Image (cartoon, rainbow, N blue to C red; front, side):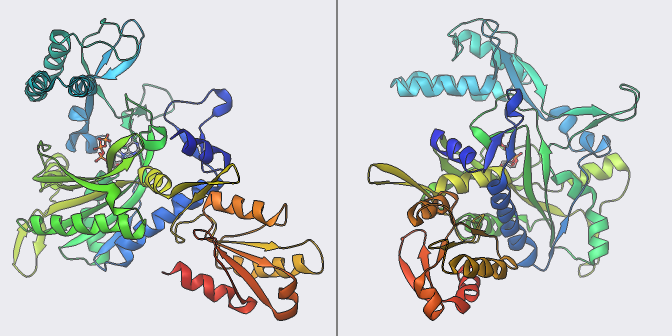
Length: 471
Ligand code: ATP
């Protein structure tokens, strides 16, 4: 991760936010290469959802919503994590993570029986009516110490709501409290009828959305894996009741395929994780996990949410959310299968998977083996020398390519150094203008991953790129 974060900073993918002021925990800025990569990830998701399915349409709902939305969704009452403070170090922890860490520690020490005893008590505590108190009692009985200070000096466990609150109106306190949305899904649910009517859609159909979400996370860290502000790419698929199981299976497979085929992730690094303990509104839930350098963690959730959300909005708004099925000639509340992937986590997954190193002449050479479709820069053009008309030919080629692709022109330093600079940002193809170009109008194309080179005609460069990028 250290190597990856330093590359991300050096080459303009991701920077610490407000760094000159010492930064702000768990907030990051995307630099020139980062915005391109992120945009390409969003594009392949958008294409996979809205272009490949004629019954899925897009939406861009507001971040601020009527606060009643979050009462209906259950976020005001229940979107919270149990937190505990170490009074000695003043560090804050998630009580459940603390216990999980303790169980792992026991397992590592080979104390298997003890680990399973604590695990059983942990499951019981999580299901207790007063969950915070039960977790606290477990921490105290097991004498779990603070991982950082080693102290045993805990506050009570308190539930901490993850929603960021702000207020409407010119004078603070004058207006109602509003929230920065903690997920994009609710903007879709409340627009169920407006989108359906405007697009003349019939169940089954889906609504897809990409947008920012905000969570006041207690535990931060692992670079952009867990942030306060992040982007979600969510799709809600509305189906007839009791057909959700088939839709769920279909989306589960399709979403895994998106990670392997559209993002080009190594399949052996991806896995499904089945949730046995389901949220009260769900009847099935799977995560897609990626093997990050810091552990195998969730990148996407696929949830079968029943009719919970539409039913709650119907109850809280007093407006019918029912759908009239023309074929069945009956009304019902559709069930929902949701796919929810974090754009920033997909970004990190792509970076981790693409990062590769090779030792060359005593130096470490980094290459980002990104799928060409995702690469921030699709091609680089180099004049071999800054003379004999080579720069002019190169500049002309760049101008022509720039109408369709993100292309860089580089005339500085040795050809080897120029290749390395492009390898580090994942540019899949480099074209060199040399003496032969001036004679026979051909250029050398060099492939990033193999360093293989071949000559093609100058006139073919554009179609070569078009073909390669559509693969
Ligand atoms: P986690 O268990 O890691 O907190 P979650 O189960 O709460 O995640 P969901 O509510 O299902 O996550 O959100 C869907 C997706 O949004 C996640 O799979 C993840 O990719 C992304 N996501 C959630 N929280 C964050 C965050 N704080 N920073 C970056 N991405 C996030």
